[in-house]
Length: 381
Image 1: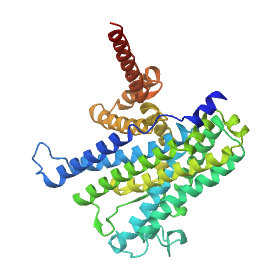
Image 2: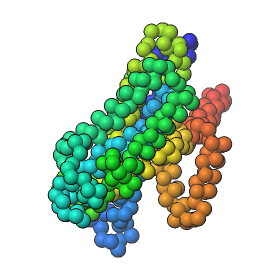
Image 3: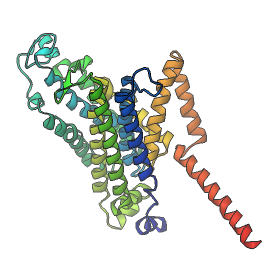
Image 4: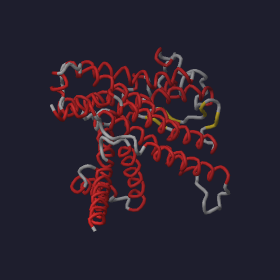
């Protein structure tokens, strides 16, 4: 009980990395964007459009890792189904982009996407109506993942399903959606998914300026979500969430409706994942059922574990580091990159159980201890 009340009275020291993180993120984004738009291609400081797109994809993954860390690191709910929320947000954006193709598709049908013409569909399904409007598609990108998370969380948390059973249920959820979206009759492109996008809000998706704009928007939204999440988790609500993570039965005993807090946080996390998916699709140019794969959700958990769960910034660092390593390993050792990536995960698990942020905390603690010892010796002298 003492530990529980400590969280309510004092909370955790958080937020000290918020300002440096935002400054570094936005600074690097501005410099990289300027280097792409204003420097000649033969300059040593030029940043290619491919690199800009790759960085944008990394930031989407960082946003997704942030969503996983919020629910796992702070509330203790190990979700292996966040890939579903990410993919649903991506499909909402993909449906909007498909509607923007119009009669420029292979079959020249101004209303039906190419895959529907190929499958001999006669009319647009009802759930595609309104997806030609950007605002409506973006609303669906957050409402659909949020609604699914609410229904799932309300049923699971009110039934007090926890631990490995909840993790298996979230994994089963994303696998069920994977199987459903693979079916052509679902109306989402089947195995091939949605691709061949042309433009977004009238801007050519292949233009350098559009790529840079998407990259900058992703960075800004990541910074905003990071700051908002930090504020929420530093508030009294965040302290209750931490108490639920450490001892849900005691929190329930002193009067808190723990299921409501868990449902709310689960929905918030799912909405962030949906936003990440919506930003991801126009930058990579495709969305298919493979994004629902349970292994993707497991990989997200690994990003958070590598960076250090329960820190927010650790989740972002872990996502950026692991995905950069993945890119480098595939280029350096195309036949053995999985072994290299696996070795990195094993080493982190064995020697950095609290992730990179845990290592950073240990180093800073030793440094403070050494400084205090030196100050004590000088005062005694």
